[in-house]
Image 1 (tube, helix red, strand yellow):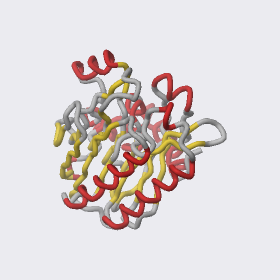
Image 2 (cartoon, helix red, strand yellow):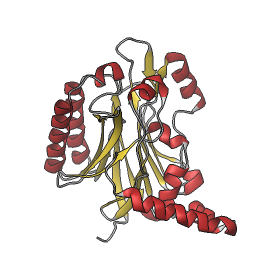
Image 3 (cartoon, helix red, strand yellow):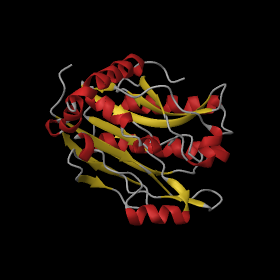
Image 4 (cartoon, one colour):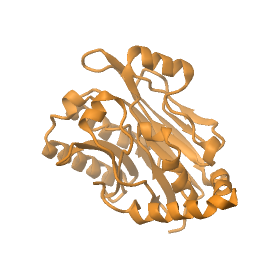
Length: 286
């Protein structure tokens, strides 16, 4: 497939503590909205179907979660676009925090499991994944990280060295109210990756309070171009969808290509890591 010159992306900002039924309804509605707005890809927040509120999400039956994902796939097939959605999946050894890449055919064609756990609840209920993300979307190489993963540049810079031009970053920056207020004031919730990689960065974050009122989330989803400048930004409190057109010629990956070549004594190690990453990239999350 010949990669397009541009691609329109939407990022959906949703509440993080609602029920599976509520989340599914909102997800289906936003898939339709993204289609009507002319987007080719719609990105949803971390665990947008199951919610990220673990006292609730950990009790969901795998059958119910699977059914909600199937309905989402059918909506994606009807819309004829790409979607990236999130669930928490039960395994024999705790939960996996997953991002599912759904093709316009309605098939889940790629899955990535979050590597670095954040917060007490996630560390209690979840374990890390077994690979970095590298996949094609309409012939464009892309990568994925989930929330806290974005604090670890190697998780997206290695895929960028291998050719990835877009980083999709579903997130749920939930924390105690004081901590989230500090994140908003300091801009620390998610940092743009373009200034250290020269790729696009698409973040879908969450808003709203937990059911017990003890935590909230910082919002401010964004789509940023490879310089780090914003193409679209969401507010701090409301559910909404933002959209931008990505000019893929801008994602020249120049900073990671420079790192790959200098200093020379590290070049061979980078290439070894890229080979190791590619060898695992298509494995199912375990």
